[in-house]
Image (tube, rainbow, N blue to C red):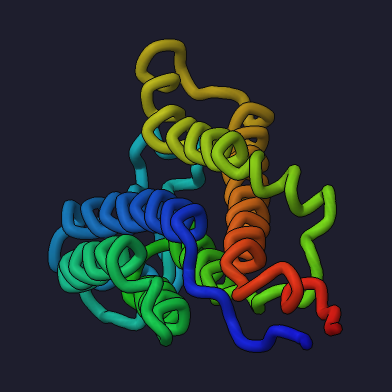
Length: 225
């Protein structure tokens, strides 16, 4: 008998979504603060820089962002508010039935009001990855079992990459000047690679939990007497 339906969101998937969701929210807040500090002025256009003229952010091209709002002060305040809601939902609401879709919607809203490009992209990835995996009809293979054990390491690498970008590059700038572009690109690869591997591993862990929680070995193997 094939088991149908979807597995509930497991601890690993909640942890990965919550941790990276908070990082995305903090990055969104950072964009908003840069916009607030620019004051009640109109942006140069739909695409602008959250931190223009700031040497510490030069290596990040001044933190580009997009907004539909005509005032940077308003854009910054709204961005901070949306980022806070996004972070709270990533931690406490993503496990709900429509939780991943709400997370994606909040990520799109964060993009529209001035939350930059990276944080909303991360939010969309998390929303897609947090969708509940289907209950497996056969035992997960060796690769899935390896991934299920490796997700904490992948999450650690991803967190290190994101923190290496901000505030890491700012600290490097203060101590030794602007870091080389190769360092920044390497941190970006570590950050996004880490989140993708962590989500894959957490989903594998979720499938393993669902498999072991099936009613009986007989029904899991699809055999009958």
